Amino acid sequence: MGRKKIKSVSYAKYGYIFSIPFVLAFLVFTAYPIFYTAIIGFTDLKGLGKTDFMIMDNPFQNFQQILKTPSFQKSLINTVIIWTCNFIPQLLLALLLTAWFTNQRQKIKGQGAFKVLFYMPNIITAATIAILFNVLFGYPMGPINDLFKLLGLADKPINFLINKWTARGIVSFIQFWMWYGQTMIVLIAGVLGINPTLFEAAEIDGATSRQVFFYITLPSLRTIMLFTLVTSLIGGMQMFDIPKLFLNGGPDNSTLTVSVFIFNQAFSGSYMYNRASAASMIMFLIIAVLSAILFYILRDKDAAKMKKELKKIKKAQKAAARGAGA
Amino acid sequence: MKKTLKHEPIAGRTITRVIKYIVCITLAILSIMPFWIMLMNATRNTYEIQQSSISLVPSSYLLNNFKVFEGKSFNPLVGFKNSFIIAAGSTLLNVYFSSLTAYALVVYHWKLRQPFFTFIMAVLMVPAQVSSIGFYQFMYRIGWTNSFLPLVLPAMAAPAVVFFMRQYLLGALSIDIVNSARIDGANEFYTFNRIVLPIMKPAIATQAIFSFVGSWNNLFMPLILLTDKKNYTMPIMVSLLRGDIYRTEFGAVYLGLSLTVLPLFIVYFALSKYIIAGVALGSMKE
Image (cartoon, rainbow over the protein chains, first blue to last red):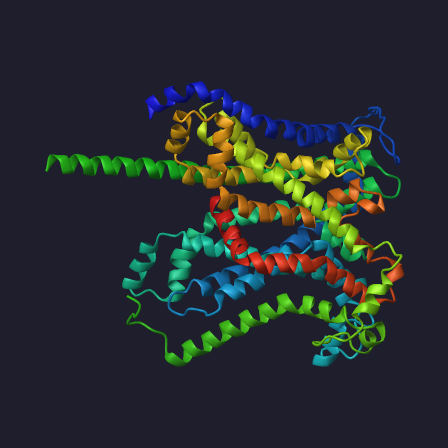
């Protein structure tokens, strides 16, 4: 290993050269705009088409005001509510399906087709789905109301879209419906990655399917589930297309999420770029904390892998030594 | 090994099996039904939809519904063209430069390699939303609003894709191939383009699908940057269907929605095998 390294030293400069496009694009299109957004958060920049700004006398005025704004607080709460109501059932259903699809004793036929169908909503334009659901839940006439009448669930048409909780519920449902398939596929992949000898040993010991799931499968999926949780939370913070186009944050701001709030502050009404920037930075902070957690998870995994590999090498060396001895 | 002694009673097993299939079929119907209703209603007129908005069979008003769009702002062809240009351009940049960066991280031993990789992991999840105001102001200043460039060029820096490509290269590329190319006198660029890229084909295909679909479906950035109707992308076109001009034209709204998803359906069902495998693979490696 050591010798090879010395040999490739002369090529080291290509490491830098090949990374230049990425670094440049990142600096220009991500780092600089974040920095710019942070600055705008401390200024008086507002109004359509304005680009000149001055730092405010009290630089933190926008942040203080945003944190006090009821609709911003509401958007944070909504984001948490909508995310929770989507994620918990999503994970539970995905786990249940994972248990079924990976059960070796009772195989489900047509798994491939089911996976394709369950994942399908995820790939369809969220903007289209938002408007489709808006039409489906139409009042007084719409497919869902017709369905309710058909099944005898309601005598009168229901106006789902003016009730705060049904509106939130539908947004949560859409998110759930779009993402459970993805979570399921991820978890199944996780199960397939578990060492098969564990399952074989359990089978020999006469464990039931349930025992196998709760004592082997579930504990082995912990890292993947944690990963799913954090990425879903970060994704949930950015929820935009569905709440924006489904009811534009309404009724009475009950589906207003942080991203929709930022967009509406900056690109409608009085074009408050400064307030929107302050809100963006608050969101950035939350996502940074979540990312730090994710970073920790991933790093931990890599380190564990390295340890494992080292052990393997040592074992192999021992075995070789023993072999040589004999 | 397949047959174990301990089994649940036969009757109980049959019941659980039936329950499993019922749940799976229900979920499958739940995935299809909204789109099916949408496609059927796209062929029906307002009167029919008002009588009963669920139909499992098509009607004959598809062409009439098409005519509603004439002279209105919703133009699926323009949306399709714009979305395609942006998605294709950003996908090309995304996969090429992510592969190149991953190659730099795997093959070369440079001083900043590990810090650079740590950095990529750290910015893995930074979303476009948090920098959107600064990005918009920046683009406005240099006159790039209503241009496709700010929607295409940032794809050159996609940390998550670099991460994926790196993991793939670590498993698939043997340094001997690179070394033998060097001995044959190939320069580093040639080696990457002609020898390494073909090895990465499977990973590139997977990431290209997701990159393309992601860009195609993106609403947030185009909505901020594109104000001229002739530049609207498909998701912005869709958002126009909420407007009041279409309030009474139910069939046309359904048709408009259908037109925006048809290309995705075709792509999805043609490539579903790779897409599902890609989702599983991405999760394992990340």
